[in-house]
Length: 121
Image 1: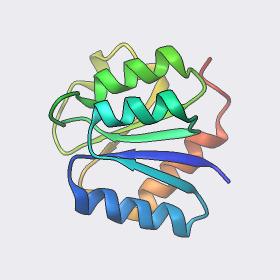
Image 2 (image 1 turned 120 degrees about the vertical axis):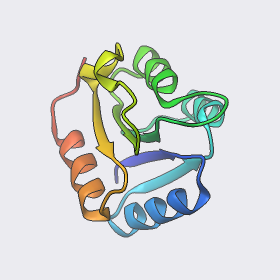
Image 3 (image 1 turned 90 degrees about the vertical axis):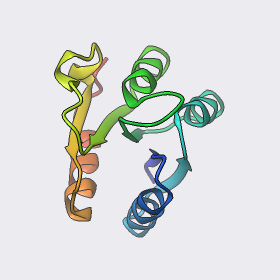
Image 4 (image 1 turned 60 degrees about the horizontal axis):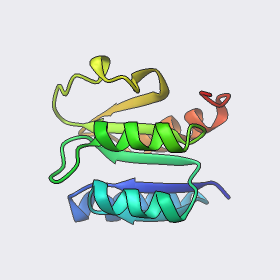
C-alpha cells in the first residue's frame, strides 16, 4: 500500500484529498503546514508527498527542498492556484505540479503516475 503525506493549510482540501486517496488504497497521513510535515517526514517514510505551495510558516518549495535532500526517493507533487514560479525551484526536476482547482481523478492519476516512474535519484 503506497504511503502518502498530504500537506495543505486548508482543512477541507486536506480532508477531501485524504478521503480520495484512502478510498484509492493509499495509507494517508496529513499535515496542516510545512513544519508539521517535516516532523512527520523525519519520523516516517512516504512514497509521495502532495503539498500546497502557498502556506504560512513554510512554503511548499522549502518543504520540497527539505524532503528532496533527505528522502530523495520520495515523489513530490506541488499544487497551487497561483503562478508560483515552480520552474525556478531547484527541486523542479523532481516535482510534479498540479494547478488548483483540480479534479480528484486528476490528482489520483498524477500521483499514481509519479509513483510508477523510476526514482528521481
